[in-house]
Length: 194
Image 1 (spheres, rainbow, N blue to C red):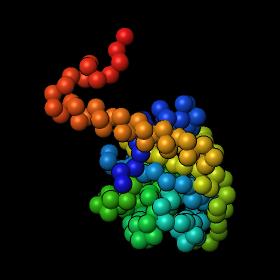
Image 2 (cartoon, rainbow, N blue to C red):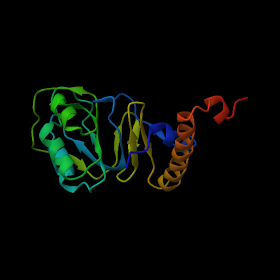
Image 3 (spheres, helix red, strand yellow):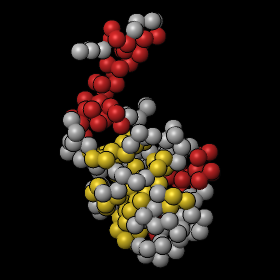
């Protein structure tokens, strides 16, 4: 199933969705939608990422606070392969990644702060499955993360069922409009204009 988009979720949330700032999608087609599985890295260390990969349930989004560091790559091709095998939806990381080309070919959705070819130490874990703060937003385990080339949004776990239902209704209404556009009905006749 195609992930819900940030425009659908933002509209359905009535403004309650929170924007994560300062991260970039690895590819323009990167998109993800799933509950957060969180971790916090010790400086220059990605052991927390590996521990979070072990614990993250299928369908979740790995959300990593690497302190915004860009001196080492906290996530690369091998971690991406493992994440895909474990059926994770993607990665949101406040820090650098490496193996950018290989990750792009792999098709694993990644939203990151930059690139660094150097590896990290694997000695200490900041935290796993505890709230993290990324791009000015606190993200708790289980909060819904929705990201694409337009934005990265976070919706609280408690609000998500209603927001998801609203977003799916918006998607269906827009699908109906697309169907009519294909047969030549002008957009001005399909939307309410003042």
